[in-house]
Image (cartoon, rainbow, N blue to C red):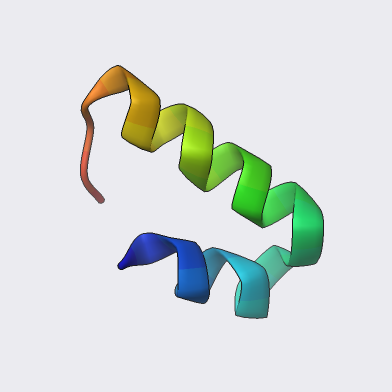
Length: 28
């Protein structure tokens, strides 16, 4: 999942961003 990569890359802010992306239905 992208959430793990987001946490590693940007910390909590990255996790929130990943949730936003996931909620909108995008996958990166």
